[in-house]
Amino acid sequence: MNLLTTLLLGILISPFFALGTAVYQVNYYESGWQEKTPGDCLMILGSKILSDNTPDLMMRERVATAEQFMTPSLQHIILTGGTVDQKIPEAEMLKKLLVEKGVDEKKMHLEKNSTSTYQNFAFSKPIIEAAQCAKLDVLSHDFHLARVKMTADKLEIPLNRLIPAEKIKPNSRERLTREYFAYLWYWLGWEWMKE
Image 1 (cartoon, helix red, strand yellow):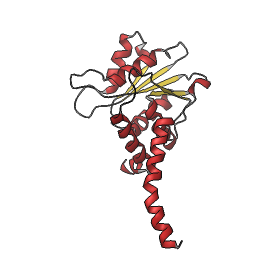
Image 2 (spheres, helix red, strand yellow):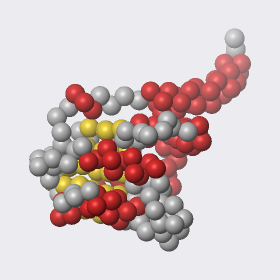
Image 3 (cartoon, rainbow, N blue to C red):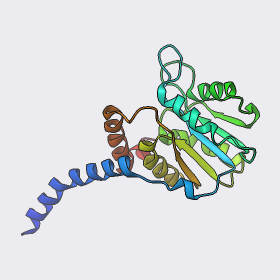
Image 4 (cartoon, one colour):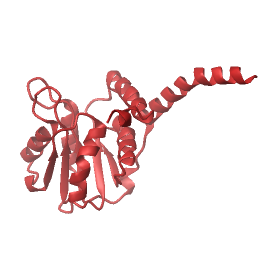
C-alpha cells in the first residue's frame, strides 16, 4: 500500500472513527459517581423552557434527582442556564422549582446568561471560585455527562462527581442524535474556537 492510498484510506475512515467515538461516549460514559464522597457544591445544568414558560421533562427530572442531594453538608447550589428566546432563564426556573421543594434559597447562586454547555461552565467558573468549592458535583442527564467532563477539563474546573438525572422516559433518538453531533463539535475543538 503506497502513501497516497494510506492517506485516502485514513481520510475515508476518520469520519466513521469520530462518529463511533461520539456514539460510544454518549451512550456508555460511566462516571462512577456512587463511589465518591459527596461534594460541598452542586451544579445543576438547565434544560429547555417550553413556550408557556414551564420546564420541560428533563429539567423536572434534574430537579427531582437533585432533591436527593440536598443535605446539610451541601454548602452551595449553582444553577446555570440562560435563555435564547426571551423566556424565563433556565437558572431562574431551576431556582423556582427547588424553592417549591423547600430547598434553602440562600445556598443558591444563579448563572443566567449561558446558552451552551461551554458557557454553562465558563460563566459559572467565577461563581465556583468565589464559593470556594472544595468538591464540585455536577448534575445533568447521562447522555450529556461525557461532554460535561470534556468541557470542565478544558476550562480547568476540577469535578468531584458527575451525577446522571433519573429518567422517567428513556432518551429519545432525536436527543441522542443531537448529542452525538454536539459531542463531535466539542471533541474536534470547534466550540472552543467559537468563543
